[in-house]
Image 1 (tube, helix red, strand yellow):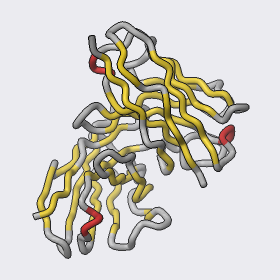
Image 2: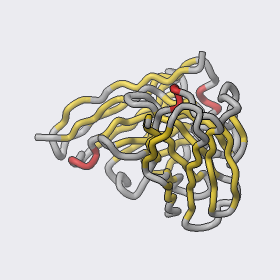
Image 3: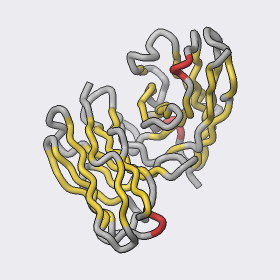
Image 4: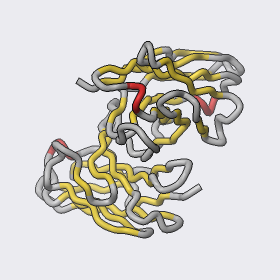
Length: 123
Length: 107
């Protein structure tokens, strides 16, 4: 079964740091672009970041650029999001998602999602 | 960034009703338009990709159409399990962007 399981969320003070993880199973992790998408309470979905299969190419939303870092460990089938200088408006459920296409370029179509992990930034 | 505008933001409908949700892009996105369903406390589920391609396992009462800037998601006969929030998303440009969502509620 194809599965993504996020972890690492929690309560953090403004200015603090947190690392999210996303454990993948049921597919060849290293052959897919992976993403982070977030959803603030009661709000819509917002793309955060993407990374290619070998980790050499990344992109970020302007709102997190310079503060968040996406990475992956293909030996552990795990995706990460290192978040620093956290602000109240980073409060959200963070989902990891897999691209639809095996290998090659990304499609930014998300057929596989994790269950999400909640990040709350508050003093 | 490409802005995606959905309408309506919410609607009330009865079981068996035909429901149509529209999504408009701020520029042409060809057919790079996807639809997701999200239920409370759950992750989004991909229903339709490339404007009209139904994902495996998605009931045939769901259909999508459109190209360029204007798109629609239609549920031909609303079922109890369809009450949810629906999002469109463009995969034409970076960043990929989502519409604000349409909440389908029980009348």
